[in-house]
Length: 101
Length: 183
Image 1 (cartoon, rainbow over the protein chains, first blue to last red):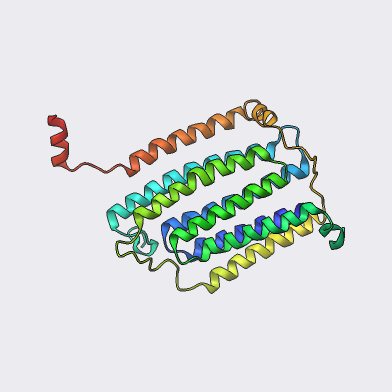
Image 2 (cartoon, rainbow over the protein chains, first blue to last red; image 1 turned 90 degrees about the horizontal axis):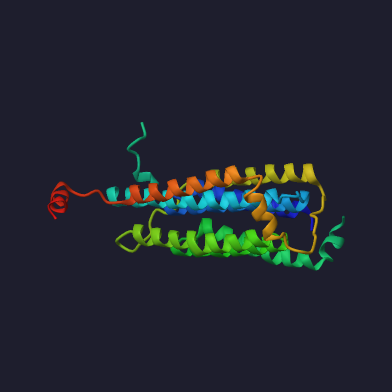
């Protein structure tokens, strides 16, 4: 297996995440796109671990850290979405112009 | 390494199948017209990613991904979708009207990264030991060299837990607070 096949797949998934982040207008779907980007990063970390083979499996440990932070991010993000929906009856980011000048 | 050499390895057939499935599922996540379908396609993309991790002999990370992402995060997303669904049942305004510029930007990001990785690594091979990375090694690494980041991450999780409860909790109205205080 070539290292680049994993890196390019990761780049493609990351680019999809960027596209979704810019195009989607529903907050939950924006969070889904962010998850896609974090998954791409995880693929890169694990692929580099297989390429370098560190004695302490550093790449995989960092992938676990990324997964943990992503779980925390989803928890907080969805709590905020819930709060916004309760106050504004909408999950559309275009409706949230309160803090825009 | 030529393409004929590359395709003659059975592990690369598995990569093509799984990688193609991940790409299709990922594309559907960002284009699906139904919110629930988008979340379910994310399950497909994550399961494929776990398969890729197994190909890279990262067994523990693959199952952590399945447990944490598919088991917990996607369920959380489905809850979020059910709560924030429009009362009319219609999902309108999911996408912005202008899609060309984001598509160009995403394609640019992809091409730049693909060019950089091809330029940097060429046909460098992934070392395949044939045996999975032992969970013992990862555990010793987590509680040895990386014990401080480990504790920091655990603190972040705790803070997120408390913060999530605090943010999502409904504030009581003054009348309700009085009622509660009287009990």
